[in-house]
Image 1 (tube, rainbow, N blue to C red):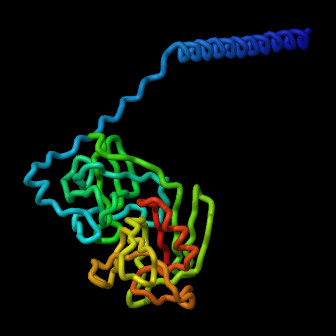
Image 2: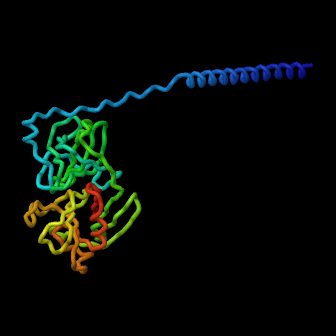
Image 3: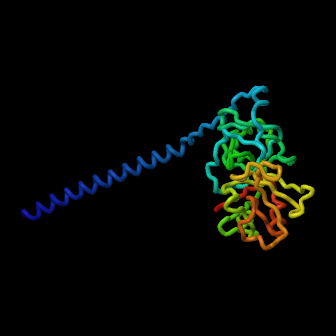
Length: 282
């Protein structure tokens, strides 16, 4: 009799525990479904749009006094390139009217960006964007200079270059990429130790066919300058890409900072759109 009573009590206790657990699970399911249904019935919160920062006001007198950002000038207050060896997405921009360059969105004006560079339309690579603003590489000294232009006034034209040029100074090789795919690679000549080719991100500034130049049918100035030469051959020490008739120079460090290309390489880069990113590594 004692054993049967104990078994009965145990059974009752176990049954009560099981019933309690089942009731708890049922309540959890009901609560979860209620919460889920309520979440479905509640529309998601609309994110608050980011309001573009307006540009600082610049008077006509201040505008006239600002330095022009060209290959001939130095913009001492320009910010450095935040990622000097990173690729961009091919985004390029052209100012259809002279644009004030700012140190940062809403910050002080530091320069004016003309619509042309070396008598060719200004096209610059975009390295950062914010609502109503673009950060671009500048063609001025110091190398790697950047500035912000306000694009909310509708006075800019945007485009895309699918190309990127990489120059490896250690292997003395130039490689062209289109949409991330290598399309050509050539041995080139680079600057000497005394007049090295500068490293970092830069871009194709223009394509020129100057008279009286017998070593190359076209000169492609970049948005970079020699770190050693303030002037060269009457110019501001702008570094460029150009051809060279003597094939023995390719693979050597022999120039004043420019990159000398074989004909096939020159033909390949001559047709690239201005603003195309050039990344030079050592």
